Image (tube, rainbow, N blue to C red; front, side, top):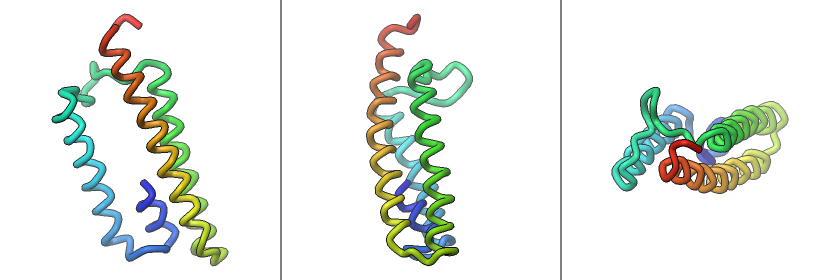
Length: 115
């Protein structure tokens, strides 16, 4: 997600090169998670971590959108070259911290589906 923020802010490479790498990387991580954990997160009956899991995913999505918008504005419109790097670090930290918390929520839901 940090690479995406940097690409949008114009701090690294061209979007046509970096954005497909981010997409392939994201899909690859999803497949890796499914293979390592045995949990398929696709479909209408897939586990989602309950209310806490959905809230965590919303936080990650909101952070990513805000970071990309601000990265574009600061990087392209205002010419502040350091801003995309700071926003990429924020997106990275939020993704890792919320991702671990989401994984814990998901595992708790799998242990006790009625919760």
